[in-house]
Every structure is written in structure tokens, then in C-alpha cells.
Image (cartoon, rainbow, N blue to C red; front, side, top):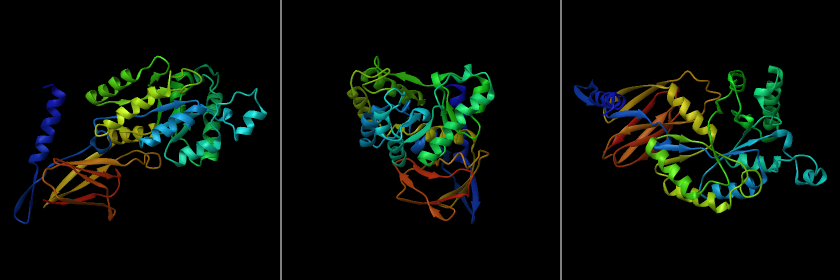
Length: 333
């Protein structure tokens, strides 16, 4: 057993042995931990779509929604038309294709519409900080005006950034896309499915970068390439968490920053968490895992409100807000 795995096991074992004297009885606490990914799934995937290309909306969105998945769509605001008529009346302008009205509908339905810069300039090649900020902040402002939500993530044009660009882009933001895996005309369903299996094995977060679906830059041979892959991922949903870039980035950073303390109770525990992140930016619930078998019912509350609970044969998963009031958990066997 590797040293890191051994230390993790030892920590869990010691926590299991932790006891508290309550009413003359020794109360043994089960292992309580915060899951690496939502619902204690093995891995996570954020499907990201660059440039807000029209067939992303027409083909990818319906396929994702039919399976209960949501994606992240990086828009270039200077190229987004207000209406389809704009495209007809101004055929010489470079349009991305998805209208603001459709992007708003997608956002209202749970997809993330976020910032891919104002005009897709290579930010590393811009001469001044003012130019870099203009590309980022103008896009933020128009997306917020049109969609009703200010972007909390950012995608670098051409995937190009340096320390200066990264520092500016990260201001008042959860995360930026600094790594991804380009998918397109050379990508097969078989390869994508094998890649997803690898994420499960390695317990990692995967971030595909997709452009056109069947018409445009780096398009797939057929929409079925993606459809069949997403159907495969759906069959693995007990192990794979599919969510937007914002949701998973928030979750991962919260896990990295949260501190958990557990007070054993008779037939329960009280869990307190501390977190130093900005709660206006980081709003993703985390999953608390209580490793306990044979539980018939569980009541979990935070701020006197019932929390979502999932009971399985050997554990209980509870969604809660980190850095907030203590989570009180009581179970019955």
C-alpha cells in the first residue's frame, strides 16, 4: 500500500475509533468524510462547447437534456446575434450562430453560459493590461445583461494564457479553463468511452473541448458519435458526475479548502465545517458521507432545514453548504 493511501486509511481508522462519553455510554463515531465528487461518485466530467456555434444548440443541447446532463457554452458576445434576422440582414458579419434568446433559454434550463472573451483575441498577444481587461470585462457585462447571470468562469481564446492573463481572468471568478481535451472529427465513440472508463479508474475530472457538432470547425463525422458516448456515460451514472464547468470547479475548490470536525452523538453526529472561500462566488453544495451500514432512516438538518439524504447499503450521502451552520444528523437502524 502506498504511503498516501496508508495515511488516508489510518486517518479513517482513527476517526472510526473516536469516541465520546454521553450519558455514561461510549459513543463510537462512524467514518465521516466529504466526498471528492457529488454523491460520492468516482469521477466527474464537464462537457464544454467553444464559440456558441449554432448546431451546439440544435443538436448537442437536446441530446444532453434527454439524458439529464447539462453543459458549459463559452460565448463570444461580439459575435452573438440578437435574432435570426440579424444574421440574414448582415450576412458578411462573423456570427457564432446561437442567438441571445436561445442562450437565455439554455441558461434557464441549467446550462452554463460563460465568457470566452469579447472578440476571441489572443490575450497573451495584447500589449496592455487595459486591452486584456476590456476583452474580459465587456464580455462579462453583456452576458450578465442578456442572460441575467454574471459569468463566474472564463475560457481563454486559443487556450492561450500566461501568468499576467491568468491573474486578471481569475479576479472575482471561481476558475478558468486551463486544461481540456479537444474532441472533433478524429474522435470516435469507442475512444471517448474508454477515456470515461479511465476517469473512473483514476478518479479524475475530465474536461472535453467541443466546437461544431456536424457543421463547422472540427466537427464530428456524425452527431451519433456524441449521442452514443453520452448514452454510455449515462449507463455509468453511479460512477460519473456530469455537470457544468462552474459546478464541478466550485465543488473541487470547496473540497480543497473545507475543514471538517465531527462530534459523535447517540445514533448520530454533528458536523461543523469551516471554509475561507468567498461564499458569493462558491455556492455549490458538498456531499457529506457517513460510512454506516444497516440504516433505515436518516434525518439531516442545517439551519433548521431538512437536507437531501441518499441511503445505500453501506453509507449515507447528505448534500450541505460548507462553512455554514453545523449539520445535525440522526439515524435509525
